[in-house]
Amino acid sequence: MLLEVSGLSKNFGGLAAVSNVDLAVRQGEIRGIIGPNGSGKSTLFNLISGIYKPEPGARIVFDGADITNREPHEIARLGIARTFQLLRIFGQMTALENLLIGYHPHIRYGIGPAMVGALGMWTEERRVRDEMMELLAFIGLAEYADMPAGEL
Image (cartoon, rainbow, N blue to C red; front, side):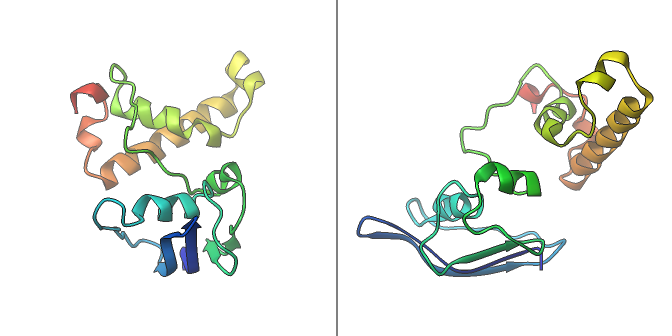
């Protein structure tokens, strides 16, 4: 299982925003969460991504690692992060460039190789660019990779 959530709850004072949610997502599955405003969708994502801490008894496991109560930056490093509804993109940059910027915390070289243009840096750049193109293909936007994001 890629993501397993069990007994997930969050209360704000006397209001139960999320109550005893169980969820399982297998590798390769795409799931959606639907519901009216105020039904707890954003709270659910905030709990999974570590923005909010769940009520005692909850368990969140991602790719075999228990991420319950971990800090958001630790969870993001493992591969779970959320975006906000008021998404800010760099409109003058291409769709691909926007993805590359978002992926930069996962780049596997430091400032030294970047300053001298080391071979490893170019290899990593090519790997990341290929991975982002695969992602664009997955969501049906590969043909727009070089289009300014503000025009999409």
